[in-house]
Length: 534
Image (cartoon, rainbow, N blue to C red):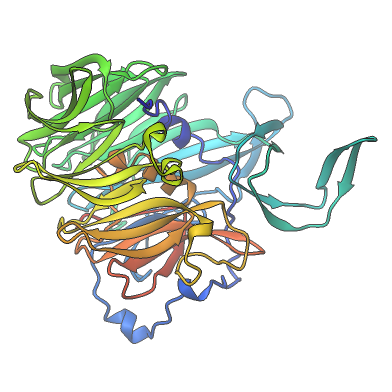
């Protein structure tokens, strides 16, 4: 069986300043987008457009901003991010070294009632020089400066050549050597909450000058925030913190190398999977009392658990787990205490699942097993076929055989937004989403919506996701418990992409109707975006 990804979440979240292919556009330069990105609209149409909820995004400077789906009604929650500039100071532990201290904000999460938003502040510094050698990169963005040179090994030895300032993209280089100032040296991490109307000071929930903060989400009753934070070089802890106007001291309730959880609808209990080791799949699955911070019961103890994030049913009466019987593994239904009620379906690999928000149905994907796949092109794609399982009848329906990387339920439970990886060579040349006049990555994602009743699907967009959004997609079963890309009325979607042409590359936030009847439009530059739940 394929191993589950271990210890990746914190490590990726803590390094937000890694070399990026995208840069902010100058404020006085209009971004010329391909026609399929642009949606000409009269101001009158935008004025009377139906709005639903609010969108929180991290803009090109690293600040947290809230706006409506037309890009108007902007509320600036933070204003002091310095991702693009930084400040000069002296690096800790060095003498006479120059360093840049930058502040950015990450991972906005709306409270269930949408009155508040939680987010992470990251401060990091750079100093000294670092060489990174990377193999197997799909695509590299090369930006040559005044002092750039290329070094080549020839029969006569090593030669170097100075090249003019250019920007280009290289597909599948055999080796990449990057020499740069290292970034991501942590100065501090903190979690804040704020009112979504921007009319109150930020409330600090947690702060650390030693270790990174990772994934976070709210309790269903809006009273607490559960989050991951490092406690050592190879250890993380699950914390709980009060999210009121006067937050208390966060409490540590579980430790391991990774953790994922889901709140019970009453907000008083959560089910948590805590990984024990970086080298195997052994983990504990336990029920935790979020009032006393005590373990209620251990459902699975130091065993292989082939899923990332557990999940209570919407009514809280049952949960999904996996069991092993006679050398076989099954997705199973358990009661709210974790006792197995019945096996649901046999699985043959790591499984990711998510309940419908309105019915007793579960969507799931099982990671493709390359050695058993008849179609080698499908076998090489991440993800697996998308299935819909009716818990009451046991009916298991394949909604799509295309390997799905991630999916998100619409709030009304009628559709899912899905993301699949495809080679650029398979793209329809007249399809929206990519500027085919310039070099592109070897593979991209395709965004589709699928009607769970009829299995009808609509292809919406080809995209290259931003780094932050790609992380959310890679761990979508975890992130889908706390954020959504759907509007509250289930009519629209928001998603961040990388747009590149022959001269530059930008992070953009796009909004589109889920029906595909209107072309997507750019509402802002930025790296991450989520929609409010109401």
